[in-house]
Length: 230
Image (cartoon, rainbow, N blue to C red; front, side, top):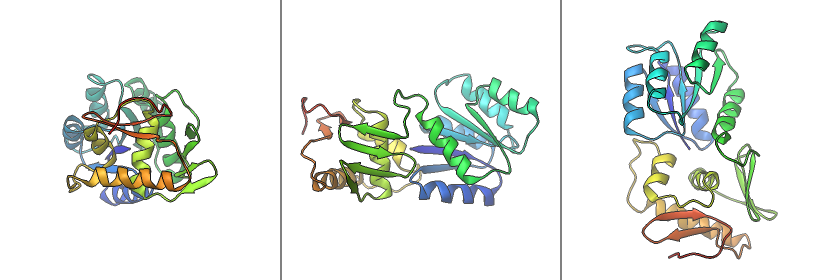
């Protein structure tokens, strides 16, 4: 999943980013409000972590601008503004959650996981497609009782497919949501990771083709074995 972190304190931004990347998230950075709006305009994000005390453009203005055109992207305010009125204003302007600094990193990550699940019908932290399962908290995947030894990138791809189960996802959409925007992605990287992911699922004893390549369209995670695939 791809997140935009809007935080002008570079040291704090680096700490948060390091932790989230270790958990498998793709992270873009913005250090002021104008840069945040620019990155939001040119990229797709699953969630925006937004500070309020920003140079050039205040975080509430950034939020108001985003919400004037987009009611779907998740926004988590992360701010030292602790007054009730600030929290009420942020939530009324369309923030999905509000976390006050200083904060515990584990709570931040838990809130991120919660927000990323909010728009999906499956609310459990453990997602399932037949006997293939993915735990969004422990960041593990398994088939029946066999734990899959996945890289962070393979897990991120599988997680995105799980969250859009039974929907065809284009290669472009997967790349947009799984890799950082500045990543130097060579043309066969996604195919390589998909191939490795499918191989590991098969090696666990799975006889079902859960991840299908739909010719000319992309990839789909489904328990249904019917349908055209490469």
